[in-house]
Amino acid sequence: MFCKKEEYRVLGLMSGTSLDGLDLAYCHFHKVSPGRWDYRILKAETLPWEEAWKKKIQAAFHYSGPELIEFHFSLGHEFGKRASHFLKKHNLAPDFIASHGQTIYHQPDSGYTFQAGSGAAIAAQTGLPVICDFRSGDVALGGQGAPLVPAGDRLLFGDYGACINLGGFANLSFDNEKGQRIAYDICPANLGLNYFSALAGIPYDKDGMLASQGKVDPFLLDELLALAYFHMPPPKSLGREWLEHEFIPILQEKSLSPHDGLRTLNQFLAILIKQEISKIPHMGKGILLTGGGTHNAFLIHLLREEMGLPIVVPDAQLIDFKEALIFAFLGVLYVEETPNCLNEVTGARYNNIGGCLYQGRLF
Image (tube, rainbow, N blue to C red; front, side, top):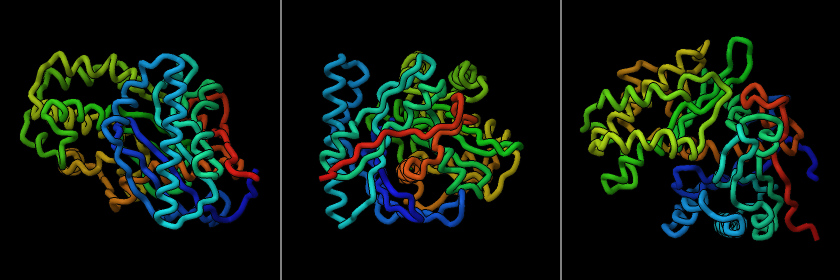
C-alpha cells in the first residue's frame, strides 16, 4: 500500500459517454491544509477513439458474457498502451494511475454498474499501480454510484457557487444551506445534441452553428420537459439505458430537421440548467462550467444572455480535462483513506472510499 504524503503526481484516465476519446491528465496535487488541496494539470491530451474502437464500445452493451469479459480486458490493455505512450512521450513518472473506465452498464436501482477497461490490464501494460472501479462500492451500499465528481468539486473548486459539467450528460454539484453537497445528473447534453448532429452528417455541432439557424419546436420541448426524471428529487443519475429507452425515441418520433432539433435541445438544456441553478443558495464566484459542451458558443449565449446566469468559463485545459483531473484526485483520496463517495450525493448508506487497487510491478 502507499504511504500518505503531502503531494502526489497522478495520471488520470477518463473516457466519457460521448466517445470523443481517452482523456489523459498528468496532475500534481499538494495538500495545503486538512481538507484543502491545490492542483495543477501539468500535461494533458485527448487521444481520439478510432472508428473501430468506437464501434466496439458502442456495441458492448449488447455483448454476451464472454464477449464482454474479453472486451473489458482488451480495452484495459488499450488504456494501458495509450497511457504508457503518453508517459514516455512526455518523460513523466506518476505515483499511480487513476482510471474511470468506460461505463457500459449503469443500473444502480438494480444493484449494479460496470465500467469496462480492466485495471489489471492497465497495470500490466504500464507497470504502475492502478486505482479503478470507483463506483461499484457505492452501488453495493445502496447508492447511485454517481455522480462522484462532487467530492473533488468540494475540495478543489469550493469557492464557486456550483459546478456544472456538460459532457454526455449535464450534471450539477453545489452545497446546500446545511453545507451538504448536492449533486446529480440534470439531463442529456452532448449525447442528445449529437443525435441530431449525426443526422446532419457531422460528429458534433461546432460552436452551435446549426442550432443558431434553427427554430424551437414547442411540442418536442414540452414532451421532453415532461419526462418523469426531471421532476424527481436527488439522489438520481442517468445512464445510456435511460437515454435509449426514454429520451431518443421521443426525438425519433418528431422527425425534425437537424437545425430545428439542435435548436430545441439547446433551449431544453438552457431551461433545465436555469431551473436547477435556481435551487443554489449562494453563487460564490459564479457557476463553473466545464466539459466538451462548454465549447458550444450558442449554448453559452443562451445561458448568459437569455437566462441571465453567472456562468464562468475557465481556460480550455480545465474545460476539457476537469473530469480526468478529478478522477486522478479521487485516487489521491483513496490513498489518503478519505471518503471519495459522498452518501449525501449518492444516497448510499454511508460515505465510502471507492476504488480497487492493482499494484503493478512489485518485483
